[in-house]
Structures are given as structure tokens and as C-alpha cells.
Image (cartoon, rainbow, N blue to C red; front, side):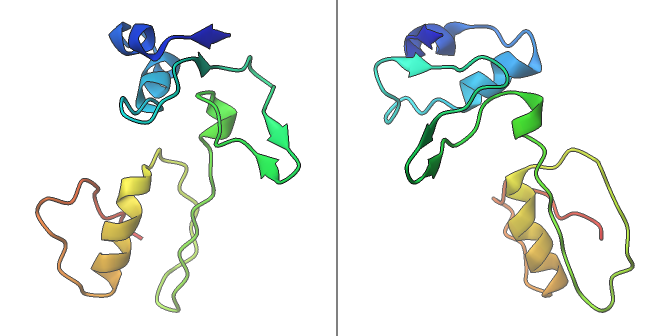
Length: 107
């Protein structure tokens, strides 16, 4: 399906898919027509694939931290990429700035 980014930005986020679509749009760098593939499809070229879709199967990414002091555990809680930097900073004993968007993950 093809959409105009201006129409997508005006949608009320009724569900997580709509919210993820809105999060994929950068007003300054989004093309004039914004394609959204159907579930189960992806763009592919000779050098790799696209940057993902708004569907659940594209949002589950393994995140592994390893340190001798860490006990082994699995945590399937939703996390955000903005949580990675504060987590690393916390365990390196580096101050996390107040303006940091993410939260350190307890390991």
C-alpha cells in the first residue's frame, strides 16, 4: 500500500501498528509517497533488505549483555533502542545525563 506521509501523520494512533508507522516517518526525510508492505513481505535488493516494517515480527530483536558478574537470565519485556546507551553507561559507572531519553535496564 502507498500513502502520503502527511495523511499518515494525521492519523490517530488507534493501535500499535498505526503508532509504529507514525514513528517511522521523519517529516524532513520521508519520501513523497510512503510504502507499507503487507504482513509477511519485505523489500529486498542485491545488497540486503529494508529497514523493517511496523509489524510485531520485525520488532523482536535479541539484546544480549555479557559480563562475568551478570547472572544468566531471559527477559522478554519490551525494550526500546534508547535504553541501550543508559544501560551500558550504568554498568560502566558513567553518569547518565538527565536529558537521556532511555532508562537503564536492570541486568
